[in-house]
Length: 164
Image (cartoon, rainbow, N blue to C red; front, side, top):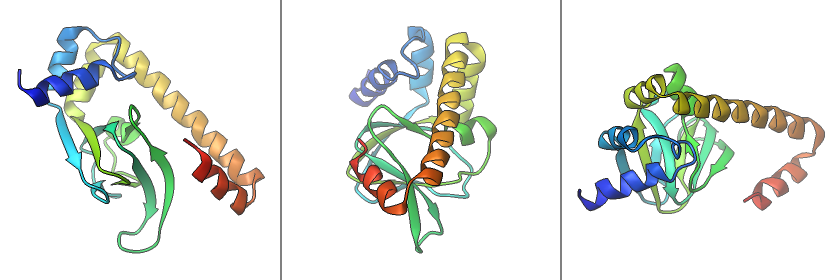
């Protein structure tokens, strides 16, 4: 097994989304997963494009932002190591609603949509993990709406920069 293949297997195996999967399932996921080494400021995916699959941050930080390319954008979420982007768009086969840009040199895994969905359809553990992830995302969005409604702009900015 080549170094990058071994690294992909380890990253998937130790990610909270996949830690309970059997080694054979992890091997199938790893075989079609791409390891992306991206420099600061690289766009991993753009708003409006069809989602290629699930992006998992191995190292570094990415920002999800909304707005038009080359114009004013608004950062809506910072995503660090172990977290993911594109889950809902991957599941629903919809265009991305945000642009994903690296904030530092970063390493991401890209699990193609068809591979990810096949894994989910064949494994109960994977399906239940997806339900939990999507549920948490919905709760987070509700919390964001609450924060937006209850806090001033200055306080929201301060909280954004102070969040981990």
